[in-house]
Amino acid sequence: MSFQNLGLSTALLKAISKKGYTTPSPIQEKAIPPVLEGRDVLASAQTGTGKTAGFTLPLLHYLSENPKTKFRPIRALILTPTRELAAQVHESVKDYSEFLNIRSAVIFGGVNQKPQVAKIRQGIDILVATPGRLLDLQNQNLLSIKRVEVFILDEADRMLDMGFLRDIERVMKLMPSKRQNLMFSATFSKDIRKLANSILNNPVQVEATPENSTVDAISQKVYRVAKGKKTGLIIKLISEGQWQQVLVFTRTKHGANRLTKKMVASGISAAAIHGNKSQGARTKALAGFKTGKVRVLVATDIAARGLDIPLLPHVVNFELPNISEDYVHRIGRTGRAGANGQALSLVSADETSYLKGIEKLIDQKIEVEIIEGFEPDPNASTEPIKQGQGRQRNQNRNRNSASRSSSGGNKNSNRNRNRRRNTNSRRSN
Image 1 (cartoon, one colour):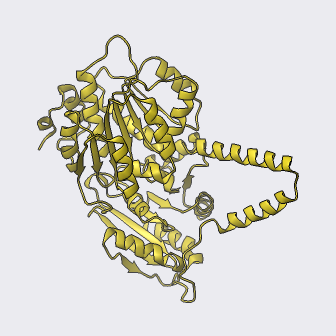
Image 2 (cartoon, rainbow, N blue to C red):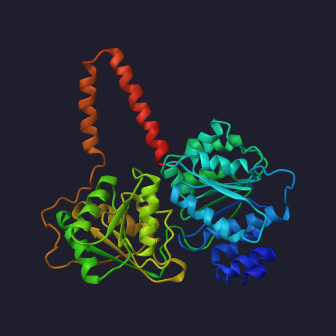
Image 3 (cartoon, rainbow, N blue to C red):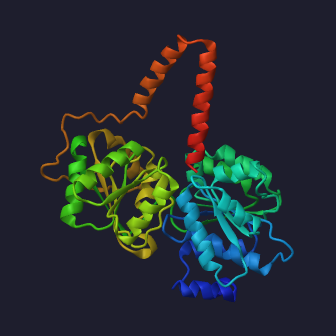
């Protein structure tokens, strides 16, 4: 099978050839034909297998073959969960539309909206967006999606994980009911299938690989280690292994910042990327990592779906995710496009149940190694970490304090908390 056999236009084939691609990946081979036919599609494939081209190429073919010459309303909307993924998808749109008369734009939070609005006002065919910024600009009457012909929900399961269900439902109401709908993701839970039933009309379901599977090119290993010795172990592995490009995942933003500082203090160039970082800082960190100026990028799961780093050799789980599916997304940053990759996890006693859940999900026992001097604590509890214990104690103290305040003070406190919550929600987009 070649791209020529898929029925794509000459201009698209030229762009594909310029990128150096000759043979479609399994998900592209299965998804592109029904999308070209105008069918709704529910597509599942592991990360790094070319899902973006699976919907971008047929979308561009349709728009270019059915042009709107008088004006340029937004005809296609691609919704993504994170800024990084939105930027990555938009780059693909621009690359593949190089020889087409197609205009596109990307919008996301964390940056000034004025350049984004100016781009939209020039007239665009395709809009790539995160939910928060999209709804914000729509509420300001700065854009309209009432003429959208194709709606694409990328990384749909991550959308639900990040609490975007209500935003998705709001977006759906702003578009015409008659349109083509595509849902692409690495995994599909029961909740996702429920969402698909509410969006898709008699969809074609395509699957390139079994759900939640990990690519064969990724070598996986677990290092059993005492919790307090993790930092020393990861520094040893990176230094003695002379690893030059390592993506490290932590469970929290604070943990990412703390580990980054310790890496730098040990002479390893490192940067953190997470939701509390400004968009400028996130872009700078990622650019430095891609060019080799930054040796280690420490990230939270917000980056798991938005990072596309060719030939990334090492991914390290400094802490295992408490959601097993996130492990698949994390290690999927390596072993992309057929390249080999190594995924390592530092596992302390309190993460034992997380490891069991991951092995059950991927139906695979992961090789275990213990390094001398970094042995696990035999007396440590295997009870999993209870998320937010510290936050709960603070909330209890706040409630006790609030009960001694006036009702007016309570109202002001509630309003302040709501404002902070809304600000944090927008910042994540």
